[in-house]
Amino acid sequence: MKMTLRWYGPGYDSVPIQHIRQIPGVSGVITTLYGKQAGDLWMPAEIRALKEAAGEAGLPVLGIESVNVSDDIKAALPKRDEHIDHYIRTLEALGQEGIGMVCYNFMPVFDWTRSDLAKIRPDGSSVLSYDQEIIDGIDPEGIFAAMEKRSGGFTLPGWEPERLRRISALFAVYREIDEAKLFDNHRYFIRALLPTLRKYDIKMAVHPDDPAWPVFGLPRIMTGAENLQRALRQADDPHNGVTLCTGSLGSDPANDIPAIIRQLGDRIHFAHVRNLAHHAPGKFDEAAHLSADGSMDMYAIMKALYDIGYRGAVRPDHGRMIWGETAMPGYGLYDRALGAAYLSGLWEAIGKSGGKQ
Ligand code: DNO
Image (cartoon, rainbow, N blue to C red; front, top):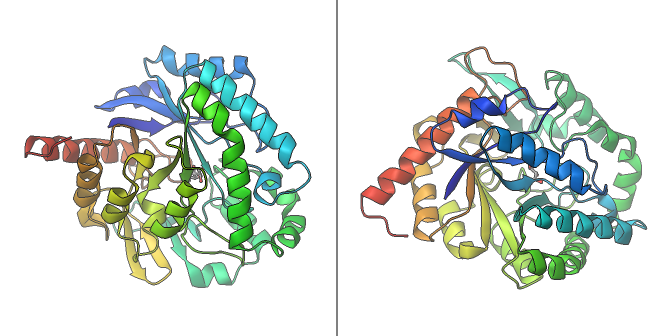
């Protein structure tokens, strides 16, 4: 595997890329053109500039998270084909720059959802947390305000203010869309990309829904083993793959993550590894990466990745905010650096104690 860190690019990330380079074992970054809206076309010169900014610090771009998919594509609205055309041209431009992995999600309207972005723990650190009861008491427009209020002035990934403008209209559209239709729209999208994915050898990695169940009455399909397998069958080609996100899948304790890793095998093109502390059904806090800090067995997760011969990018995911750091919730440097070192340590130990790749 290749240990990476997510970096939002010049002008967006408060973490300097030079600091990312100092984390032992990190050999590349996962980045994006953060100012782009879903449906936009990415220009070759913009991609080149991003690559150069990372390259100056000695870090290659090992993947894009995300080229976002518009609701026109997800809900088959009139601009669907235009946006797919933009997506294909964006992939061509990425392919020409040698970027071979793209993470995306297929969640309607919202991306990941949390009820608190800075819950204070007894040790004084803060974490993101989720409580279904709180979410049930917020209307969908209120969740934007709630996320924004606690985001420390940062635009959160997937929570760009541009989305808010269309929110009522989008809710009306999704009333007509059930899981089956959402899967149909996913199939239409992924199949349209296939010739380009093959030509440039770009691996698409769909991100699981977070949390892994419908929120605000919107359908969600990337929720567990069965549905992820179904997403892979939509276009049975190795370029159509998955981001194995332990925190998103792990929001539902019924998801056996090591087993899912073994089932999905070489269709896993990217891995987000983080830990959660479960309190009750639909109620969890994010935790430090260490197994002992949460409910998940991080050794078993890394062992499963090791056993399937995983060679793609891994990144530590949302960290706690510690040591007085100010950064985008979940994306400070310090706790993610601890996470990267811990995960690299597990990997080394698995290899040295007889793990075979
Ligand atoms: C949140 C992230 C998500 C993820 C997208 C992938 O922290 O995990 O925003 O990047 O869902 O498209």
